Image (cartoon, rainbow, N blue to C red; front, side, top):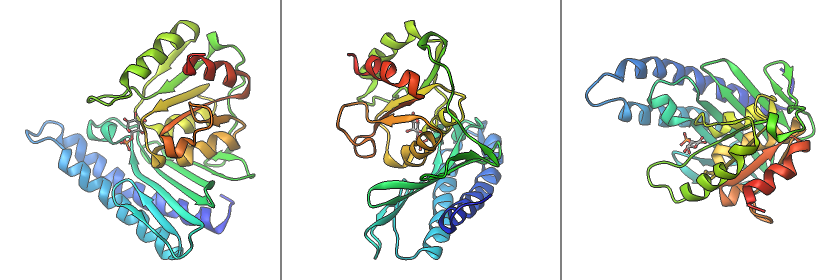
Length: 262
Ligand code: LIP
């Protein structure tokens, strides 16, 4: 696997955390039937994965900043570079023994994502990209789908749960989109939803109410695979607003108009 020194540091960190998570995932499957359930165990697995990743990344690049889902923001001596990490994206899937979760690591330079790794350890699929160097899954080059008509396209999203405020807007999105497409999938891991758009498996994806660490790496994968990515609302920054939409070029504008309600 070619790439910059930073990318190789990211891939090494993702693989090391992935090995830890796969071991823990096997235990989670056994804990499904326990009275207390696997909740505390998954929290420990999530935190251990972030500890492993932070140790690897900060050991290799001690001056960079770090933003992680579990530990929050740590400023670095170099104010222009920051790691953005979700050690376990798809936590609820992991908790329920569903093998669809990923380690997501992005490198941000002066506010722009320049390197990305999304590692699906359960399926051994390493998605990676660097700005201007394309998007890859393991050794295969990724391209977004070639579909040109909404009625043949499938889209992914995340449907809010547990009282999240974005549920009404998402239900309105679905009411507008479902009649004009071939279907919507809700598989529970934004980083993999974005990676699947980059791989041409989904034709587009959108979600409201997620975090920078859920989407940062996947956004670069989609761009480097030839896709279009933006915030849902005109002029917003997806990473700041927690709302993102993406698709291949032929579908993007029409898809975005539907989600915007235009
Ligand atoms: C998850 C996202 C997913 C979203 C879930 C959750 P987590 O991230 O990847 O797209 O629908 O609500 O936010 O919490 O598993 O890292």
